[in-house]
Length: 354
Length: 178
Ligand SMILES: [Zn+2]
Ligand SMILES: [Zn+2]
Image 1 (cartoon, each protein chain N blue to C red):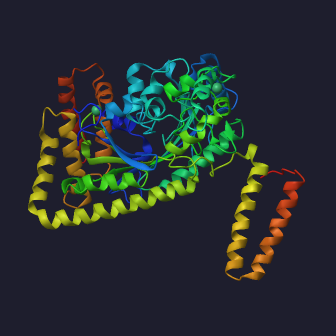
Image 2 (cartoon, each protein chain N blue to C red):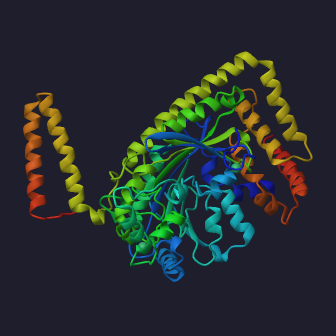
């Protein structure tokens, strides 16, 4: 398979479309947790009943379209090879715990991979909507519509006082988790991020450095999400998150201007060196790759690097994860081999830009 | 910043926990956050595992012994999950568990959701009729107060009529379709 074809398969189509403020907010996500009234939650281990949920979802919603979300395909965990599951995990379409549920787990995924509904993960349904850029309101609207579509047929577990009933008390009420993925290189370079995180936490939001592999935030990517799901309307939860994200965007923009002014040629040097490493290295570990990709993406956003597409950061962060590398290599790779393949893949991907 | 649990890895998950009105900063590495059940991988949902297992006696209003016995035997009659299991795992077994463990839940929800215990968001259409109308009624009553306060009496009269109609519908038990 050519690299271009591989990338086309590997990258969710929605990821390559433009979005608002996408020099800083790479993507927005909204997730709703829902359960069937009459069936024990997946946490109960009542597998027979859970298989019925899976079969019901397949019968009613497989191969269906809803509004802009075309062609939902039902994918059962049972039918997938381990590496195929890992790929879905790395694309964030399913969670690792769903991947382990061979007999009861499944996902309904829309053709453009913007919507995915995990079946029998921690709750019967986990409806997820992704948008490129800063689009939380749209993501909420579409998630709600999708929820209505399911609700027409499914009797949800709902209580007037407690709202949507979920297997974990942390999700009860709205069942809503809204999050954004932000690229914050300038706030990181200036160390402002360390002061900012506790401030954001105080407002009831969770900040998470991602692609961490147990260490610090790789690629200066941070996810910010709401902590509380009960006692606020969906709209308010999203609005409160949005207002904080807007402030973080402003801070990052100001920090970018500041580093441009203060660092000047040093910043330019750092960015071009990182580009040089990505374009030329023969062995590269994921940590170094992430750092360089973050620099390159910043260089693109600051107008220092031209003729490279913006999506390269998101794309290569996904493509250089272990399962994708193995899929591209078409064999199991040792960690050392992975680093060689990672370097190859990045070089080839950069060549596609010219 | 170092992970508070393993003291080895860099902390990447950060949030504030409100416990008895006191805010505590929590900083964990990805592994510990997952291990402690503070979040699941691409979901970042925070679990109350710790809150349930160790930190709190949430039986303050019931006498100690009585509540201990009640807790030992309390069980959801639909799915069989015991209160002890729920407390240990931090997960309900079915929707009925909410009713079965109701008397213990309010303090838990308060702690997890910054003092909130009542849902004010979306309502499924199926459940909705009456509940939607009640919500609407509450909102209209607030609006009426505001209008009276602003001395917008003409509009207030209209809202008052709407409230009357809504109340009549509710009293007739006519759920309608919201
Ligand atoms: Zn740790
Ligand atoms: Zn139960």
